[in-house]
Amino acid sequence: MPTTPDQLADLPYAHLLRPHPGPLRAEERYDTAHFDGLRFEGQASGASFLECALTGVELQGAKLRQARFNEAWVQGARWVAVELAESDWQDSAVLGSVLAGISGYGAALRRVVFRQCKLEAVNLRGALLRDVVFEDCLLRDVDLGGAKLTDVSVPGSTLEEVRLNGATLKNVDLRGAVRLGLPDGPQGLRGALIGTAQLFDLAPQFAHALGITVKDS
Image (cartoon, rainbow, N blue to C red; front, top):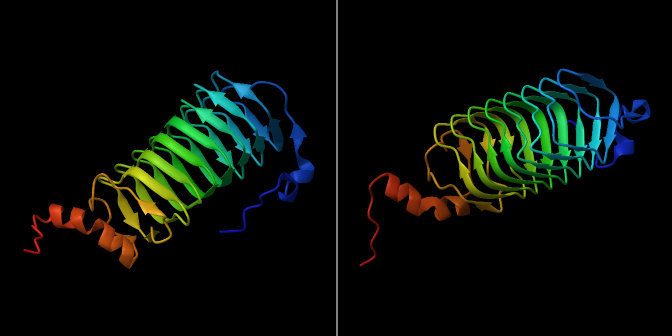
């Protein structure tokens, strides 16, 4: 995955960006637009964002079902109770942002980076994640039940109450996680890479799942 710029000016399309002060609209196509400090609560389902930058954007209860984000760059966002079900993300980055109460079931994320983000109460059931990185993030109460994860990594991230029940994993690298809080235990971990220390931490859950009683005396 290419290096993700930390600064707006470092985006390859930064010189093409044009300020967009207006509201978001359903089914609208936005190309090389810069949304800065936008606050939005309405309907924008099916909107398309191509080579767009969204900085300091606050969405509260907004509807972006089936929205498309292609080469989008999101920084300092606060999205609460936003509907992103069946949305499509490709070659995009979300940096220093808070996403809480998100409905993102059935979404597709390909080559997406989350860096220094907080994801809380996020529903990604049945989602597709391919080449996705969660770097230095907090994932709390994130539901990935039935999702398909391929080439996903979590360097420096903390996982709390992350559910993988029924998920399909391939080359999912959990070794860089600061903490693995998996309430479903080993269920859904087939196809994941974990470290030795993590294996010891998860040992009680593995033993319970296998019906093993561990006693030293």
